[in-house]
Image (cartoon, rainbow, N blue to C red):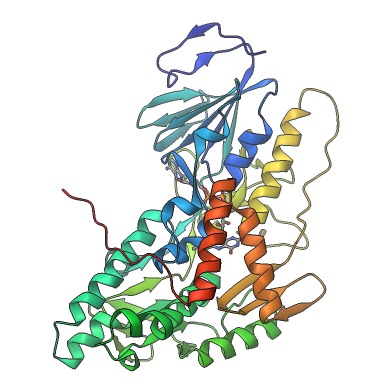
Length: 431
Ligand SMILES: Cc1cc2nc3c(=O)[nH]c(=O)nc-3n(C[C@H](O)[C@H](O)[C@H](O)COP(=O)(O)OP(=O)(O)OC[C@H]3O[C@@H](n4cnc5c(N)ncnc54)[C@H](O)[C@@H]3O)c2cc1C
């Protein structure tokens, strides 16, 4: 039973309660899962996010490639808490944390907390290159996915008006930077678009003119996966016509030409940056610059600087013997840390000991294209059709909301049977 005592207007209009207040910053995998686990507990929970929906990042590239509509991989945060009386959701941009008076400053006002949980995820790391940050595309939000989709189809449309070969190259070629799962999945999806979609939609365009480059600084793609998966993924990409540029780096991009460290220049107006992440910096939560913005936490996800502040998900850096540089920044880590903190907080005042967090590695997967994926499990690796089926299954069932699951499944079945994706619309905001 939730008790309302009084309203405090400077607290984002959240009622004052007899219960302690947990403020969760970020409604991604970690924050949303934690709030869900705290429904109907002896806490008042306030969940803050700049967006009113949760986004399923692993399928961003399918939105960018026009395989899925954004609404199929987004879920309204409020919907999850319709029946709860102790969880309050506020759409707000978080600006600052004041640990002295235990409050968070947002663009909508200030809120006080008893416990603070930071679950702000990660942002694209451009390694200080302002020009690349300004002119390239990245894939960290649904908005950015749509930006890529619009730009790609606009450029294909524009290319039909261009007689000059060089100029046309700039419009139809792609350079992807970063050979991690995002870069590999993007490159594979583009190769399939070149093979199956472009000849149908843009019959006047020679698909042979479309170059897809994937630039990776290391010797192999998917550096976090096993050698077997790396080899297989490389083979798949090459077979699909992706031009791999390994052991080289992108050093500059003026919007027309991509400069590589080796001295090579690639012509494209679309540079897709998937080369690294860092964490958002919030005033009051400053961290060691060596931690790439992550907050160092103990084995209960408590920030080493302040035991009333917890960090979970991509933003948490928990060092252990097995993970001396922290856990992989993936959805499983976020979900498992959220479960742990929920358990810890529920038992906090009960004198019960909660075992320290131990990450359960359930394996990693990356898809390259139709019937082609690689999978690493703790004791074995596999590739091909079976790995692809596992990838489809895992992603389908990790999506939030039955409606989303059904829509995505129908889309995937349709694409598999017809070799086509349904949606190639250029929809832009009108000023
Ligand atoms: C393209 C892509 C593909 C991926 N593929 C996979 C995959 O296949 N498998 C896998 O396991 N993982 C994958 N990941 C990683 C996975 O998505 C992350 O590890 C996971 O989302 C981390 O969860 P989180 O809750 O820590 O952060 P997020 O899910 O990023 O949530 C952070 C939330 O904080 C909010 N926020 C941030 N700053 C502010 C602010 N200042 N004010 C208000 N709100 C704010 C954001 O709006 C967001 O809702 C992928 C990531 C990307 C980008």
